[in-house]
Amino acid sequence: MSIFGNIVSAIFGGAKSAASAITGGAAATAETPAAGAPATGKPMTRAEVEAMIQKLADQSKEKNLNWRQSIVDLMKLLNLDSSLKSREQLAKELGYTGALNGSAEMNVWLHKQVMTKLAESGGVVPDSLK
Image 1 (cartoon, rainbow, N blue to C red):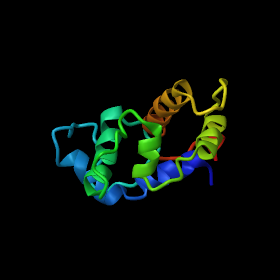
Image 2: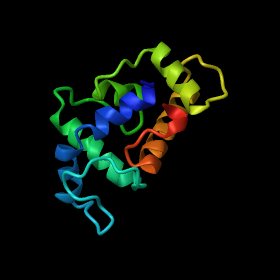
Image 3: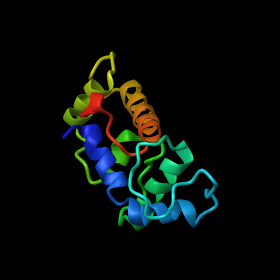
Image 4: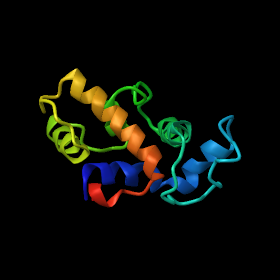
């Protein structure tokens, strides 16, 4: 499975428990998926994606992860390999054209792309990223 696929599985695989973070909190709206709903492939807002990840962060033993800004910390939160090799592979999957050297530029780009693609895909790995 792709690195992005692993990210999707780590977040949306627990959608039944994580969705309560959306419906039970201030982020609940008419557009919010029902609690316990599996990934549907329908676009979500970034706030909905962040609410699901925050639920995982709340359950994590490690409390000092800056997952909202750091791709490394996001991957650590999801118990995924955050090594440079894994981030290079993720960058290739997502179409990064810069140097694959783990620079701040690459990592910021990766985080932005992951969050955008998570929201766009609604928790389903697009065929182009499988």
